[in-house]
Length: 333
Length: 192
Image (tube, rainbow over all chains, first blue to last red; front, side, top):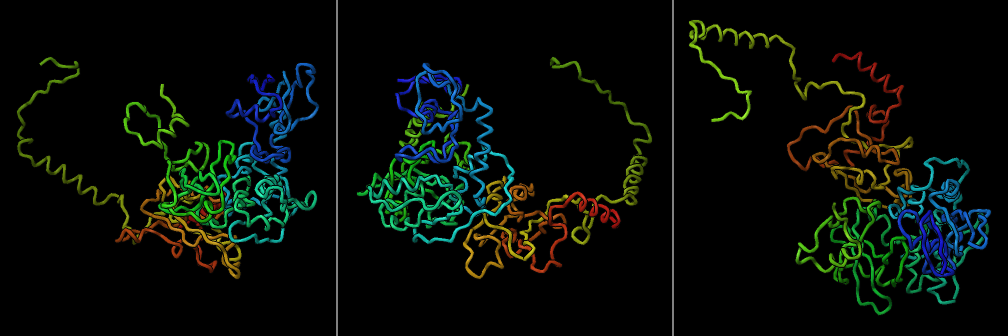
């Protein structure tokens, strides 16, 4: 076990844990943002530099600070490490630069993009960036590649986080068909992406994509995400666990996604049949409304049970009870 | 009964004098007030034949703007609808087809865009939210009175401004300080 101090908060984690995961054990607003790191994907992380933190003391044995900011998602903790994230002016300053770098080639077509409202890059830029740009040169463009009727690829929006590459590797089980071609400015997610589209789990690249580069074609321009209401549901699926979130507009299921945790990570992959074919309420067993963070735009006009005394209301629906246990409401007084 | 406060005033009822009993002086006093009002400046105007002057920043009827090349600016991003406190705006987005590049500015456009003028409170938050400078509240137009409720749901046919630039509302745009000053001067010259 290693004991580290993160932003003045002490936490004890097993050896080999990364700084980011140690911070996530503390939770709350001190957790560094992550654009490329994705817990279920082995090898992910260390690419976007969004999670840079300052190590003020390396360890108990060698308490010198690390010379440069380190990527917290790939740096393992050491006993006695002192890490600064929100407390360090330097980190916050560098993060502004990272936003600027990520946005250099991003088309900023959020009004058109289907990811807007649940986009990691949007949140990242909103929370850490500056609202102006100094970039005047032309942004990179690509020839449009049609990768089938289910998934829409917008290469211009890609920030090269490699998450979809690792996902494709994982679902294709060693039969590698997906990668990044080119170098530097010319790098792009490989066109061999067509080859995994036939895979039963290919739809998961939509969920892992932090930006709008890979989006659901069956949901394309249907509705803005903040006008749809997420509902947790499951079904008996022979291929996957079948635990999903349905996105409703009125009575219609517009979109099916896997369930994400508070860091936007999918815990269980879902198959393409669940994602693209089962868009009837009758196909699913509804569990109840999915929890949406108050800070998200999706929670606009989305009402959850407010402060309430559970013991007073005798016959709360099971789904509500389960939800309340998971996300206990604020207690008054 | 015990009074609750010591503020109660006791009124004495005196018997009326002869003039008061005759009522005529009081009647003439009242009639003179009425007659004076005949010649005073009127507080009302004969709407709709007569219209009051608008302030240059008046928030009236919505307009969906076109750009310099006559393409619709609105891309149906939904920010106006989510900003709307009265939930008056609804829209349906669609994908621009090949050959429609001269009609719509972006890849996505609004197939339908409806504003319910009965719900709308003309707060201008939609105008503020719009990232494409597409929706504006015109300073010189109001939603006119109508007989049927459904006539107040304004679709794209009534919201999108005309293709001919000469027919467009001059004031349905966000004004620069200089433009606003010029407009104010122009309005000051007009008879009220």
